Length: 109
Image 1 (cartoon, rainbow, N blue to C red):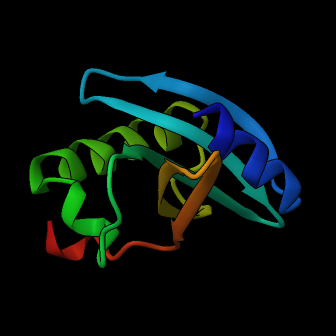
Image 2: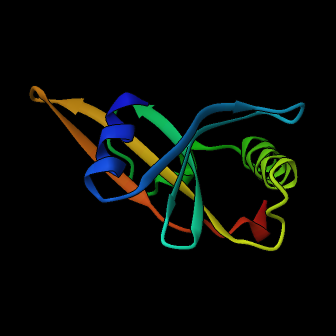
């Protein structure tokens, strides 16, 4: 998660919170940029995937969505703009390879 944290800081995102827990689950990282809140699921991967989304189960996606709603409700931000991103990190050849998928369509969970 620290590697993902540094990645988003370099992209100019503003850090809000890490490891937010609710009764539904956990959000690894929460950032903002402009008027948008970004909930980020971080996956440490052992190999390359053509589709990062195949590494996250439907059950996990539902938990992430419910937890994001919990966070928005806690801070009275239900009507704000937000999205969910996935980040996969592979350590290969002494460097980190980051795959970032923005704005996951959570309608199909």
